[in-house]
Length: 259
Image 1 (cartoon, rainbow, N blue to C red):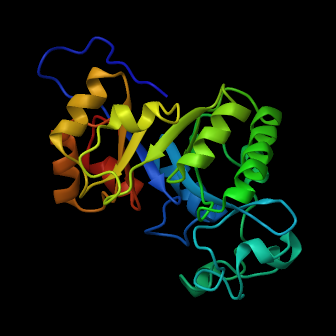
Image 2 (cartoon, rainbow, N blue to C red; image 1 turned 180 degrees about the horizontal axis):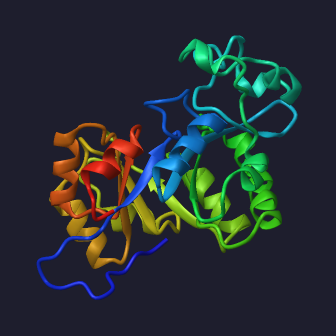
């Protein structure tokens, strides 16, 4: 996923994409249809979401290894069937108004959300190399079946998975999530080149000017997550990044009228 500056003048900044982190997760339960629809209403350009593989091979939209924190259930996603996960309440933990919210399945989102809104699908593997190939094949089949005009970015911290995804689905854009300690001092271009990624993603705390310079010089897009306060926003706008991930997409857009 490469971005170019059309008609940009020296000294001007980019108009970064606003990505809703786990949907509008500051105002609704994360990774739910309500959070995603709020993100669409806020005008977010993309929705960032997390997927995991269930026991029966479904791509479930949930961040944690275990369902305990965000549902009324217990156990690891990988040990639960789709019907068991579907029966859980994914909204009450956030507020009683969201009682009855269910855990989405990735394949359902392609019909539930407008194609004008892109998806940044972060794949959670927990480093399990045995399931990497299955996850890559499953996601590739789904993306090909749902192909259309929607912008899709597949991202992960797991480089072994990204390499498998590049092999299984070379037409899909990949994003590499930087790990703070492991990647210290390494260039985004070097990291992305190793897995065939065209987008470098790091936290607001990790962001350095050298990352931006290297990304620009090598045609990479650069996304930053953890941008939830005015001071955070000012920092990343000065850095001239391509995308900002936030739990509050509506608030962010109000603070940047040009977006």
